[in-house]
Image 1 (tube, one colour):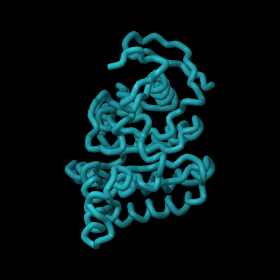
Image 2 (image 1 turned 45 degrees about the horizontal axis):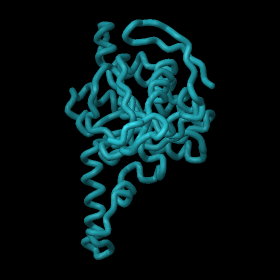
Image 3 (image 1 turned 90 degrees about the vertical axis):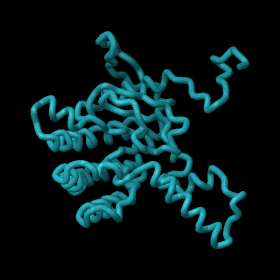
Image 4 (image 1 turned 120 degrees about the vertical axis):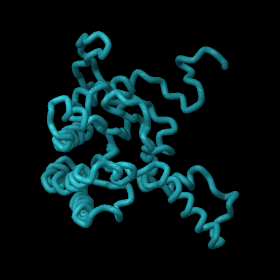
Length: 265
């Protein structure tokens, strides 16, 4: 059992809790929100929040790996984030260069493999190189997959997957009636994760409660946990609190849990 201190967000009461080691979510996805608000509260430029958020990624990645998480997917940059001011976008594009440049040795030491999903061919050349190098340098790692959603959008992903299946139909390799949900899932950017493709737990920080075009297909039966902490304030304890909340849920996947459900409706 993993023990941690849990703070009730409503009352502020702190109690000791224990995580069930047999019920750690295999795949956790996080919408890392609140970098800008964290900085503004401290009268700092927004980029200071992004820099601190990068340090949080390092902390949380190692903590998740230690807890036994198999895949950690982080929403790093969306297809809509290009609308932000150019100075902020340029800084965000440099972050992977700095992040991977300093953190890859730690990733290798912790047996963590890097994966990136998104339209990476649209990123600046230096960012693309940093991504390719990190993937190559951690390719032999067999532990947790640290999956970055970089220039990623859920709707665009579904359109691309549909186009790929349509091309097979057009080539006569596939009949429209043969297309299944599993087949579409395999065409998505998480297809290579196989049975780990769908997150068990989705966390969003900073108090917002929306998906923001993130993994729209994959989170169909994920458990959602929304937390008030801004991403730069997130850490191992916050991660453990989110997992504890997840462990109190009863996942039914549209059916009934015989141990807890007594009604027939």
